[in-house]
Image (cartoon, rainbow, N blue to C red):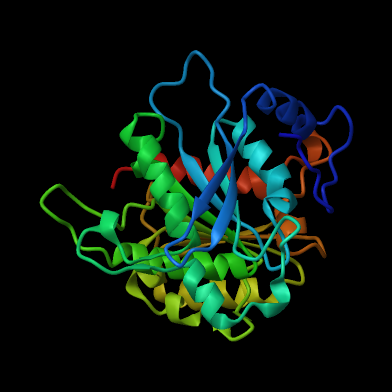
Length: 312
């Protein structure tokens, strides 16, 4: 597959991000095709993690969901940078996005809800409702069963309305009951919300923020630009629910929960960048050089490493 540079990527020739992309190119990307339970065809791109001789066991894996009007291509710089740094990525074109058949004008709140759907039956493999994210999750599960990926190292990254879809799916995922063979859900290790949208065409992130799994349980990283009002609003709401476990960086200013015990990992993070970029353009922004190494990708890499290595 040929990589597509998204608008907003600001890396310069010879920069670390470019070197990382060249390294990642050695891994063979894979175009995947699926069908959801309501017969919607989906395409997704799998970016296998670049591996070294020192790596042991399957890598962490990120499900990467683009914003409204985006596609896997608009977040591909982020996917490739994660890939080059040892994280596998699956980036779907959400329904009615990407390709010649894209038609986002007709999307309604019910369509976004279907993207996040996973329900029906007691056994998850027989679920009646399998939306976009669930279909990708099931492919990852098949790879984990084959020993190539690890279901205990999954993190979901959503951008814009993709963040709302991710949050709703996290809640639905956690609702699956354990059966005799073990847990069926609630295993996702972290959630990243990049420029999260509060409401898009009637589809709101608010119900998911009120569910226990998102409100207090799963580790969350919120990323926004200086004009991302919804990102700050969502972070502040979550912060009220986690008064003892937050850490934030706004520009160059650091703050953390005053009651956080020493050596305890916070469960809620805010990383606000001094930029007007939002959405997929923010997510796809790479540092120009080592002096400007701070980037959404670097923040996500650190978060993925922390949550997937922490004891449950």
